Image (cartoon, rainbow, N blue to C red):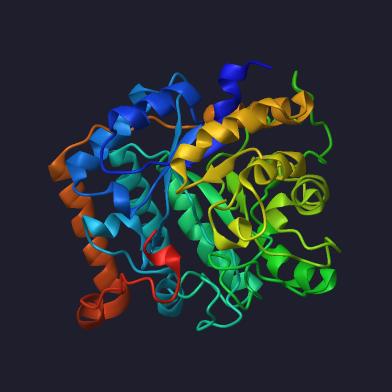
Length: 396
């Protein structure tokens, strides 16, 4: 195990709109596997592309560059452009071609800025559109079939533009009654209930190409099931990665522990039972559900032992050096497994498109046209609030 490669298991936030000398030095030392950007990092189109180029320039290995660009209130790029319709608005319009168009536009927009992964689609079912569980407006359906149909359309079109996708929030926040940004939800759903609804959606996005339980699969040098060279990359019903949520499911773990830190959920359920062979990441480890329960050292140790490949630290950016030291003390087999999966994931990443302000404006015009097509001109003019009163997910 090469100590210099340990940072590849960290997905970190970035403090500001440009890289100061101290942050640049930190990133050069730690060499994070990826960077996630938020509203605090976005001021203008040109500034954003420069920041992303600078992050690439200091990375010895091509980094994951990601963002939450879902639509509606969880659309970081609305700070410099038009706000796309959200998943609920798209499902209520009930036009799958418009959803596919949204995925296509999103993929081209992100490639233009230099992103290579979008942290969506949201695969949670909406049990209550008004619940305070962070999902308001973000769900593609109220049934398994509706979520699968709509999320597949977005996912396939976005991936066709070269942007990798991430299914979230496994195994599902649908039945949560509190927001994990604040505290740890307890989700008292039986395995039978989960299989019939929440897990029924996620199973549809694993795909035969990602299943280590299929016949005729082979193992690579790291002992991990290798995805065949001819994996159907553009198949709509495959996500490239999964994000594990911070919720406690007593049906999987008798003791209080978030799914994101649970071997029973990450390895035994998602990897072994459901056969997912893509990249697995935690949700943000700076959320209240984690901060209120665990130290950073304990969180990193539990996440990698559970089977996560990437630990996401969005806001305590200076803490990534401590996380790096914790990773150095972990069992080598756990670390090597995660490093192999991150490395394999990165072979899929597409390079950025050439940037121009005019190209951005053309895509931004398409976003407005889509918004009007979905909502009509009067509703399209009413944007989502930015005060974060319902959930910090709105303003992070």
